[in-house]
Image (cartoon, rainbow, N blue to C red):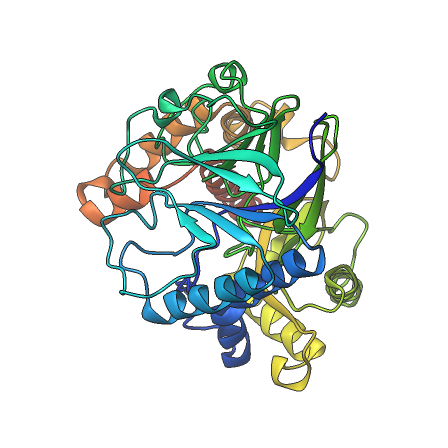
Length: 425
């Protein structure tokens, strides 16, 4: 029989993230976002103390840059010292954003803080407050940002502990959405003999496997509209029989959100305004006591489509909705409408124009096929942009497009062309 214990698993804190691209954001929003990673970390530390966990695991990318900001390091030192005062140990590995060779201030940390080195996998025994051995914790840090070696291969459990916990910043099974650093396979991790793999690197929480548990907690604070929804850490309880249970705890200080609004059935600007305002109110309710950054995505087909094709009109809608909700200066629980994304289609009156035999029908059929097939979409975009791609900046822009953005551009271009052709007719 093992000794029951509890630990907190978090990763990807990205302290002092610069939140690039905020030049046009309201000052109050910008300032809150710049502090949000610190506020989230403070919530994490408070959670660990409130739950009286035996230890905390931080699985890499504690800082946003290899040359860590001094402010972030001082904040880290303060909070880890507070955890140590409550008898809570912290086990740390560094990842690709904060590798070992990055600049670090010479600061003193309590002996309860363990930072694993990068030369080999190390392990430390962990005892509870009664002095009973509860686990061995293993880890290895990145020596530099781009680690292509399989670090998981160096992990081997050392006999003598009832529970073995591995801490690793890695890309399991080649997740295409993240850099393929410290690549490894889920099957490999599962066969190693560890009870829990505390992973970092992927910013969306995932439990890849149970028994043994292989877990990404995601990051603790969203940093863009690619990182929407709750963010936080896993509170992990291990029973006396060795059973593992996970409880996700949300620590985000600001919530990033996206909502879909359909234009179907809407025949006036007043109706559309009411739907958009309702979506903003729903976002505020879902965010609870926290502020939110919101993107509204207009979808569906309807008579309002043509009026939404002008960037000037969309900008006016954006500013009007911000004015309706009120300035972030006026409240703590604000909703900042970051953008309106138009993915609508024109209302089909009579026969579907894509079913005909003319140029317009062929245009719409090709656009629909390109939206379904990413390879065909790539080919169509290459053909359309061929004359412009002599310019290096445009080539860089095109290379940066993912499948979703490419599909959106093709669909928007086809619908705009269709609208212009209909007007000419």
